[in-house]
Length: 401
Image 1: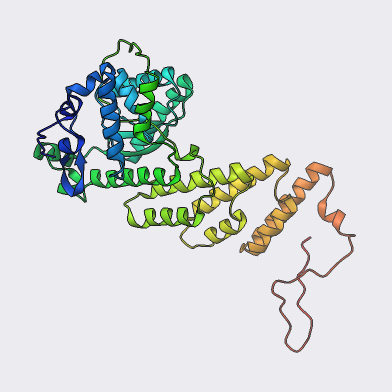
Image 2: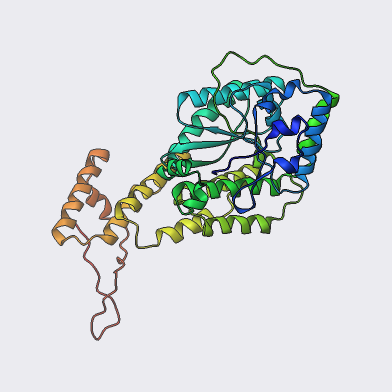
């Protein structure tokens, strides 16, 4: 952000300055608490320094909507304490193997100490949503299998060249390039975090955690011998938040607003809707709509290609045969359907009759037309019935012999 702070947390912990003195003003009302090397030795602070920090943190909470912590690199005790103290934590990963293994190591250490709670995952520097979903899936599968933790996907940030320019110019990309691809991703992430805090009630403050540590000092845990790596925070799943009586109309309005006002892709919206449908089916055992009615409405449109409709019809027939062990239509139905739609010439009908007669003879060793000669004669139905001029009876078709 192009800011050079005059005072840092080190001045606060040494008693030289108060929290208001070290707060540095950033763009658009953002207030920054500059970190320093002194905070890295937090576990060695004496009682007075702990109380000083806790009191100042509590003072901060009373004046701001959000307190965002960017943890230091590595998985030491200080990083773990800050992660556990936050109401919501997000693990930031990328497609690099070292990023995935380091994030996994952090979650393992957090769980060994105590339950880290639900986990959010954000994927950084990817080409598109599809790539981020694939990276998240690989990471989540490993975490679920080996740590018994189910991390939830919160979003991604695209690999945008404007980010590098923003870093060099020391101007936040959401200000210098508010319509860039990376900025739109950050807007979506911010909306996701805001939604979490609306749905998840907060029972204690951030400072309360540190106050508890004064009474029961946290044991110092020896971190595994792993290469350190930068990490941004982990924790919290909207699906696992217990909310009493949510206002569904508000939730629907939020969803509608997100779809209308953000640059979500068709794939992202489709994924969200499918997730809601899956939850509905899991809870009620049925779909929230009439499948037959929707299929009829969709298939009645003229823009479906012939091949698509044919493949769909074949799929439905295949499912029918598999479930009921019989075809949807017998041979008689098939033949009647064919003849009613056929525009073949008279000679083609005669050839068809001959084929039927040969098949009947091979099957029963009898002549089909000899067998039907004595069948009670009924007047064939004419489509359409053609009346002879001056008489009120239709013309009868001659029976094939």
